[in-house]
Every structure is written in C-alpha cells, then in structure tokens.
View: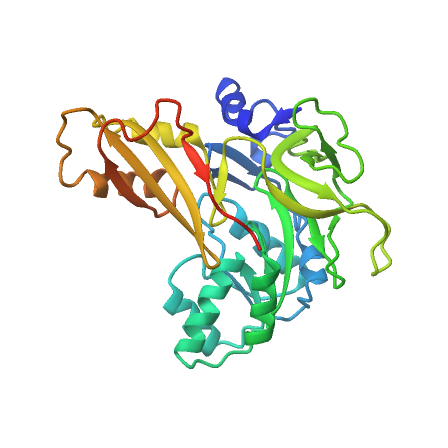
Length: 354
C-alpha cells in the first residue's frame, strides 16, 4: 500500500510526483497543491476526475445553472466539479467558497437550480437566504468533502425543499463513489478498484467490518496502485433498490491516520508543525476540533514556555499563520506552561455525527 499520509515524503524524495506520473509533464493540464503538501496532476481528458456520473445521479441535468462553491485556487476541488459539470452540459457559476452574502445574491439574481459544495456551507447559505427573505430556485445539491448527517439532509429538504445527494472522492483520485436516488450507500465508480482492508495488515476487512478505503486507479496519467486513502468505511451488503449490482460503500466512518478533515480540508500534523515552527514562543500545541450544530469549529491551544510572557499579538499571528498554511480559520488560545501533557495528541477530534 501507498498511504496518503506518506505521499508528501514520497513526493519530496522524487519531486514533484513521487515517480508516479505516467506521462511527460507537458501533457498535464494543471498541477494542484493539496494540504500535506501534496501535488496533484490533472490530465487533459474531458471529465478527467469522473464526476459527471455522480452529478447526474444526484439529479443535476444538462442545462442546469449550477453554483460551484469549491475553491479553484491551489486545491483541485473546484476544477474537479467544474469539469464534471461541463461534461454534463451545465453552465457553472464559479463562486468559490466563503462570501455568504455574495452567494445569497447569486442565488437571487441568477436562475441557479443546482449547488456544489460542502453540506455545512449549503446550510449556511440557505439559512442566510431565509433570514434575508431572499427567493431562489435551488432544488438540487451535490455535496462532498464533509460528513452528511441524515438530520441535516432531512432539514435541508423539509425546510428549504433542496434534494441533497452526497459523493465521495479524494484530491489524488477524483470521484470514487456516489449515491443514487435510493440513497442506500454509495455506488463505487466503475473506473476504479476499491478494497476495504484492515489498516494494520492490508488484508480484506471482511463482510460487515470497517476498514480503510484502498484504491487502485488504472489511470495512464497518475496510476496510483493500492493507494491507502486513510478513510475508514463499511462496504454495503446486498443489492441496491435501483437495480445496479456493483459494489457500494455503506458510509464513511472517519479517518485512520493522524490527519483530520475540517470543513472539507485536511489538517496534517506535520504541516501544522511547520507552521508553528515560525512561533518560537510556543513549546507545545494541540488542535481541538468540535462541532456546533452542523458547523465545524477548530481551536489551537498554544502553550508558552515557563516564565515567558507571550507577546500581545501572538494569538493573532498564529491565527494568520494557520490560515496561510492550512487555509482554515480557527480560534487560538494561549495557555500557560504545563497545561498540555508532553504526550498530548497534536490533533483531537471531538466531533460526533448524528
């Protein structure tokens, strides 16, 4: 297995793609940079990331005007979904993330019928639109990169009339699985081979057992073989009511390794280590991830040396560094020496999913 957590070191040893690029660099359309850092090549084929079938299964149809709220900068998500929408024949509003007021205005000013993004951001936009008494035509959403609690799916449909379907993919491999109209698990893309394995041994986890998602993509541009995604999942049993007989994932359960996904972005301890090395006043840190309603919260607790008086602006500087390196906003709490144990985990995920 080639583990995702090991990919940054592999790429540093054989830059820029760890020896896995199968074509000359001149035949690469784009190069993206994901947290890690990890470089992700994109080939020139239409719908290179294979998202068009997932979008169609979600109910998006040719001609639908779709709001794509994933970032087009550095990380590949924006271009991944954009290429799938274009292959499907959908015009795209390339709004990117954030700017809730602008997103609400776009829904009001344009006949947007489809949404692409994370479920939490979809909820934020729809709540803001309701508070502003803004009308819109949004009816279909395809969400990815975050857990989708059933309680949130139901609320988005019952309160706002939006049909929400979810998919699963990675920045390295593109679309891996997606829901059909039955919503009984996610159908695995027919262009990849997916195994559910014991994270310790790499052997099949067995029916009904949780295991790591390991993917083989026979892609001539970037042919990753037995790529350990670090995601834990269950394989669905039996057939799907829609009639398709291929394998399905019942659900994604969480992560195997040290990296944690927050608001759709991975936070890697090694990357945060490099960021915190800029702040010599900090001797130890811990990131705590919680969830309020359907929104992720992240706080970094920074411990200063014994007897040291931290500068007044230390918290603000750490906050800016975090946003520059992991591209996530988070609160910073400066704590006195001795607060964090010497063996404290650098990232603690306290979220629960209902």
